Image 1 (cartoon, one colour):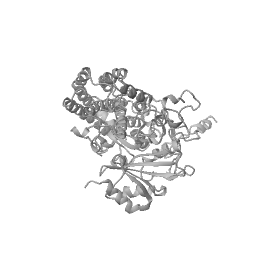
Image 2 (cartoon, each protein chain N blue to C red):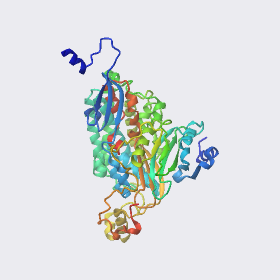
Image 3 (cartoon, rainbow over the protein chains, first blue to last red):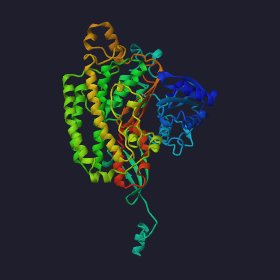
Image 4 (cartoon, helix red, strand yellow):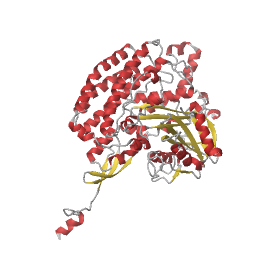
Length: 175
Length: 409
């Protein structure tokens, strides 16, 4: 019997109940948000469960939402159950002033560099990571470049502030 | 007195001493044997690697950040520069991600055209990787031999999109122009000539005693470790796991095509080599099937009906109001994108290439993350070469098909 999103959702809610929220299926991919301190427990449960067997960490990254006060950074996990050929995605949100999240390196060897990359660009501190240092950027860098407060282009340029092209203050491209 | 001074600088071990001294050796970042910008700080005990530390990021270009300020069609050239040995796969993967987000329905013929260019790209990638394994083990002629046939593939790209290495092939919704007669002629030429060459290439290597001695047991990995390290693509299949995105989650109408997924057993350099060779044969069969399937479709369709995102014909832009508006909006990047969150992955030449795209309803991606396969599996490199000879470490690296551009994004 092929696993369905409903069944996975049911198993997860049985186990974690109130810890999960925002369960949806955008483009058919089961997505949910979990409480920050539950991330390892969820990963472990999904890994060990004999039916689910989500034993492949496809991707781990972060997203910065500056407007969500107290939950600015989202860490996103993409998991894949190769046995059942089904994927899922879950997110945990953390305060940008206290961006401490448990590391998944004990469970997945591949999480090592993925977490280093996430730390490098967003400053998420993975508690328990064996070697949490910058990976793609220079080690002397003192900021986290993929955060939204660092605009890509020079903001003093005036040739780009042109209302004629729909880039007025009401509909700025940058966010 | 003099002897004492010498001893201070060079510790001389007695004949049967178990005490060992290790040397630090910098392999890379611009070493000719690494084929790209890779640095490994190796701790060597004589010729053996005791410990390795990989440093990456030498050609990091912040593509994810740049993509947050660019309209979608301007992100395609960025994806060229990930795995530049098979740029069409990256382009198409990215375009399909966008189409998934926008909900554009792609005609079957476009799907088959995409399959053809993606499989050509896979062949060109695999032939480079495999022949470079040969170069590193001392067999240069195979490399020069197949390189000619990469040229034929590049000529096909050239005919389709005008460029060779960084192709920027395709547009959101399809292709910029239809395949012309020359394209089909060149594909036929390639399909006719390459099998003979590949057969000869296999003859040179597969049962070659020296090659087998150099690659068997070099950098092996078990299926379990490979999965834990996030291996995908030929490297994972060489370890015995038959995971292929084209089969597991078919995209671009791969479900219409019959092909087999070759697997290895030991996950060593030799198995990786064999898996890639067999995949080239499979790719050629896929291209033939796709060509046949294409014939059943109306031959003037090369893009989807998506006026919001696909550039209208230049002739219409000059004569029709509607088309002029779309043209302007697309070129200026003024089309709003529906909010959404999508993950789409394709079977890249070296593994699962994923695109995680978040749109908040603006005109560019809110966040775009590339799942770059070799960034993820390169972590296993120190484990693979522990205890190996330095020259084996070099072969192991080239057999992993690492592309610095993709790793550093």
